[in-house]
Image 1 (cartoon, rainbow, N blue to C red):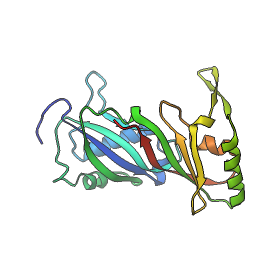
Image 2 (cartoon, rainbow, N blue to C red):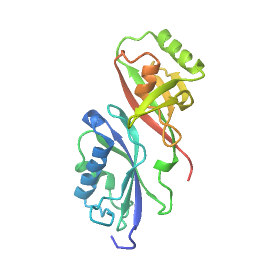
Image 3 (cartoon, rainbow, N blue to C red):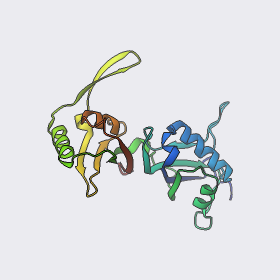
Image 4 (cartoon, rainbow, N blue to C red):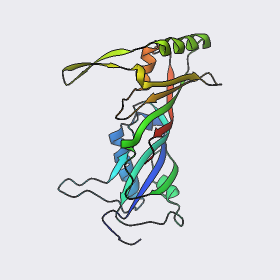
Length: 220
C-alpha cells in the first residue's frame, strides 16, 4: 500500500442485509461498516475538522424490516489496495456481524458521481406468509394500476402537504412463486416505500416479508 493523494482509491461494495440486521437503521449500518473496515485494516479516509467522519456513503437507505441483496456502499481510501491479490471480501466477512453478506467489490473512478445522486428505482419481492387468494392479489394490482391518482397527506415539521403516489409505481406483477414484484421509484425524483404501497393496496393485514433485490441507476 502506498500513499498517493487525499483520495487514493474509491471502492464500491455491493452487499446484503438479512436476519437481525434488517431491523438496523441506515445510520447504524454505516457505523457497522466503519467498524468492519477498521477491524479489517483498510486505510479509510476521514473528513477534516473537529468531528471527523469516515468517507462512506450508502446509495439508498433501506427501510427497517426489509432484507436486501443489492445495497451499495462507496468508500474512499487514503491508500490504494490491490483487489487482485487480496481477498478483501473474505477479510471483511471475518469481522462482519451475522446477516451482512458481500456480493461484489470493485474499483471506481475517483471522478465518478455518487450513486446516491443517480438512483432511479428499486425492485422489491413481497412474500405473503398468510393464505392469500391469488385472484385477490391480481385484482388489487389491477385496481391500483388503474387509478389515475393516489393522493396522500403528509405532515412534516408541522407542515401539511399532499403527494400523488401513483407516478411512483413503475410496475406491479406476480411471479411464478405467487410473490408480488413491485418496481417503485426511489431517490430525488420521489420515493415510495413498499409498506406505503401495501397499505394503499389494502393488504397490510396480511403477514408478509419484503426483500429488495435490484436497484436501477442513471449511467454516469
